[in-house]
Length: 213
Image (cartoon, rainbow, N blue to C red; front, top):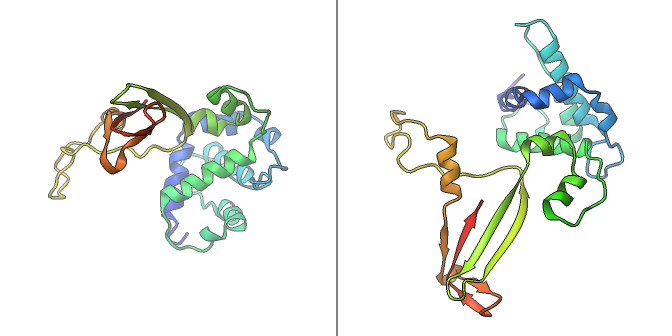
């Protein structure tokens, strides 16, 4: 289907996320569709993806599948992906996850606690499988005052170890583990100079340390 390998890559990735596929195969997900969500697509994307998953996993093994109906559904709601030009796979994956999430989002009442409240408002399968919460702590080096914030996330841009792979580009190095990349992401960093933190206790910009968990 033209240069739509970016779409194939994203679909292969998601369809092999077993809990998500089991949800669409073994549960009447249409009961979860919120057609009144103003930032959703009236269930069009969730239905198209659900049909694709059922066709892919319940058909005869080895049969080729041309997801033309799914492609048409995406074209109808997101003109950016119309046609058969190449696109960024992460951009498409982000759109698809968000679209399915909003199509299935029941939007219940908010709660007081940060993560508990977020989960109450966002209960669909996408939140359960792909979202988490970051704990960010900032500590003033002068008075040791600490500020802690919590933010939901779906994607993490983790750093790569400097000694991974081969600088010559011949692929001779070993691939870093995901655990190591996450360790680097969570390493403590220093804020100073132009990046100094305004400490609410000292009431001035001070050197600080920041750490993600």
